[in-house]
Image 1 (tube, rainbow, N blue to C red):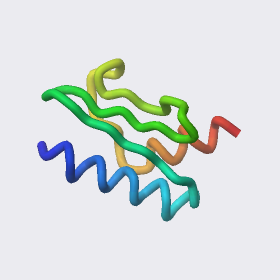
Image 2: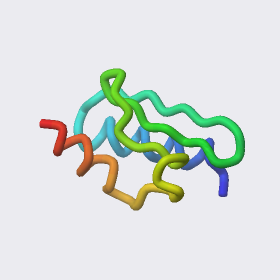
Image 3: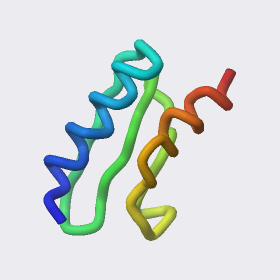
Image 4: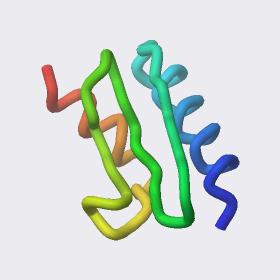
Length: 64
């Protein structure tokens, strides 16, 4: 899996769906972290998986 491509997809999803600026970082083979307003919303390292389509937007909405 191409983490860079996935990171860009996630960033674009957040920006188009929720109109929020998102910073997405990746490193190593298993790290992908989604940050919104400086807060970690999703971590592949902690969850052990990649986010499903739409999952990040749902998580951000739940932050309120």
